[in-house]
Amino acid sequence: MKTPLIFATLATTILLSNCSNSEFDTTDVVKSIPPSSYKEIDRLKKEGTISYDQENQISIRTPMYHLQGEVKCEDDTKDARGTCETVGIEAYQNYIPPEYKTDKCDSDGWCSVIQPKFPKDIVGNLDWAEFYGFGEDVYTIGSVNRPGDPTGDNTYQIFKNNEEIFSHQMFFGEESVVEDASQVLDSPAFTFYDLGGWLEGWDSNGNAFTTPTFSRNIWYKDETLNQKYDMNASSYLFAFENKIGFVGEKGGKKFFFFNGQKISADFDEITTNSCCAGTAYPIEVDKNGILLSLAKRGEIYYFVEVDLNQFL
Image 1: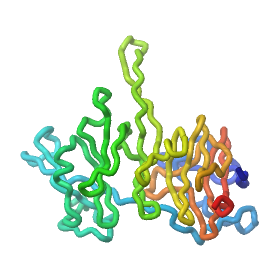
Image 2: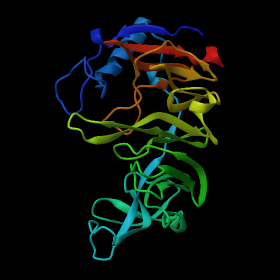
Image 3: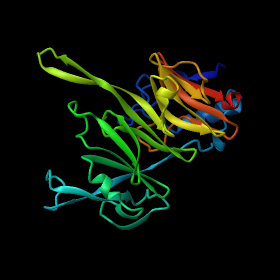
Image 4: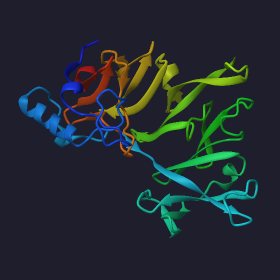
């Protein structure tokens, strides 16, 4: 394995901000990166410290469009449990897949999708469902069980239009079983919470509780990458020169994995998303195949630069 260039610690360069707090805190978990980071990268580039060219980024993945179900209720409320059903899908007015056709939009900006067709027969059999759109397709993620129920089997299915493409035991996190839905090399990729099981215990008051054990896992081209590459966890799939890469994890340490091989040193954290934007930051690749990312080891933050061409 070739060692990547680690060239700067953010404790002495860039201030990291928490989106809910106007004060910068360089010791907090990375939540967002202010615009000053781009100036810092530009300065390091001019100094010759790094090779990454932020003016010529390339697309390494394409996020899917998040949709929502169009709900109709018998008593015209969405709060009356048991009287509502999902009768269609809606796309937000400023975030509609180009190939989709929509009808009227409500006061909140959600527009009824009339093409592609709503997978009514699929959704009618599910107790819970969410939707993503891309191209001319609808991706439905759902379960016949109530989300997060330890007494259920916690099996969730992913459908492409009316066809099931994946089924697995998943954990329902804060909002979903899926952390990320993207298209990579023209194929869907879902990072989901892979449920390992439930641990039973007792709290200090003698009350029983259950705790889930889970890890991030990527489903891509009919395979889960944790199993294919013997990982404890995987997330943030990307591609360069028709080869895939992702953030892998083994033994509690995270690293970059590309073209079937580990290509970076170990870190405690590798930042993949910001909290205030829909786009992922800061894993980026320029037209020359130079990957730039932000990582943390101990209490120190690093920029990490890797030439992906070395691993083709």
